Length: 292
Image (cartoon, rainbow, N blue to C red):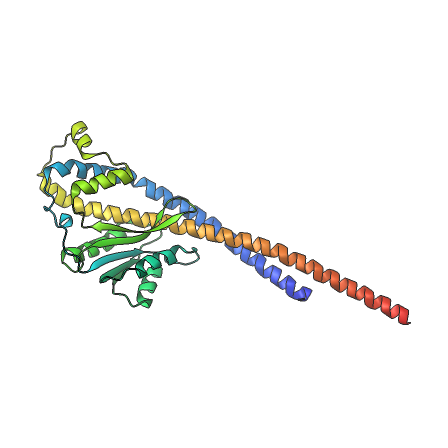
């Protein structure tokens, strides 16, 4: 059995760790709330963009814009969104598993140091990595999206797909890979958007809110689609940040609870060791008195 001094030292060490994990849990909880609010704050803007696209759909052809044209896929473009720091449970590992399952030719782009390190370590074709602050400024995400879409328009890649943790609730962050480009058929894309995000159908919008376009619908579409792609990926980054802070809060809470449980077990072990030491001393005194 370990000495009481060793057990006391270990109890002190575990209590210090518990204090640290508790502080990290509170910080992550605060950041998670702000990240959730930021993701929800952009919904009205995303709704308006979707409504405008829905209004444009009947007035344009599907091959009008390069984003709407399907091409033969020779090289996929994959954007991996991860956290900059660790201590967030299996969040990044689940994303790495999806990236590892990609066996077809692909070029990779990353947002987040953990993703950059993984792609470099596994010797994948990492074209560029981008740094985005924790508060997720739109201009930083847009710079990354502009670079990737330029590669798409130049024919360097034939798709734009995003791997990120989709925030469902505090306990569940689902790793997904979401295709962004090409949009293929604009009407089918809007129908899918309606199912997932509750966007009003194009026919209903045209019936209830008739639009007049100045300049023509084709020019408006050419200007609107890049904004929509940037906003869509920006939303993915916001969801990834909310997922990161949620996963870290849960991981730190679990660590704090385990530390509390371990302190209890060590305290019990300490009391047993102390009692055994006292009993041993009493026996030694009693044996000495009898021998005398």
